Image 1: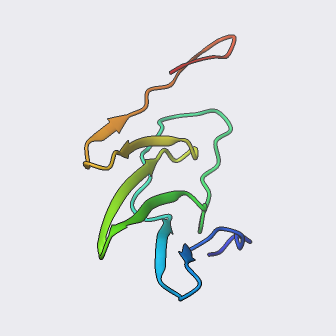
Image 2: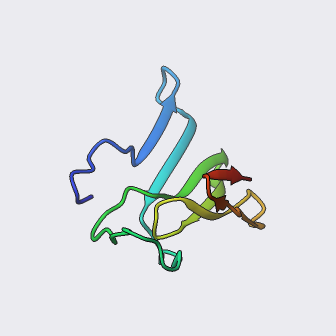
Length: 103
């Protein structure tokens, strides 16, 4: 990854003493297009890698994986994520002055 991002795992594998895989999770970052947040004062777009986690794949049994996906606003916050059954869930954040966040 670019932009000095070098500490994010690509995968984590747990094995028993015989080398059999007991658990495995793989991670992908920065896949897809960022959602446009609109006009924000002093917002500067980031070029290159952001380090946004976009997919988590967990090994369930054999070669079956359970996947969770994430998409992001151009400001870096999560826009929506899919649960294990691929149902898209939207996150709505409302900011008023003085700043209050409602989830």
